[in-house]
Length: 171
Image (cartoon, rainbow, N blue to C red; front, side, top):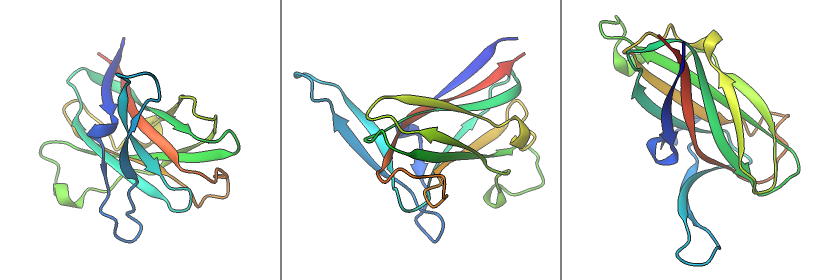
């Protein structure tokens, strides 16, 4: 058994539509302050006051066996407080008797992460218990969110999402 990885950079994700409860973060681009030519990167700014969501869709490779985990790369501009992050997953197999437009996600998996000023953080969300019966070849939809109105989310600044990785155990 080995580990398979699907790289999910910031630009692979899309915000939800902004309707009630479907708020999305803002996408912006940041230029390093290092001497030119300096790197520039995309990031999603998750608000400190409103729960916001991103979604990404991909096909699960044929070598998928089990153990879905999402690893999230993020940072904050403060070193005071905690951010509450979460992820939900939905999967659709060819021939499923549910229309693609009616798909709903499994229960959310959440984690509380300590903010560290401007330093890259990474955390993992194990989706094994809430995996919507994933199978090789499925279309997978991940929803990543910041649970800003959760009492445990105490960071009074935006949190920035840089991308992530979907990992799994291979055949």
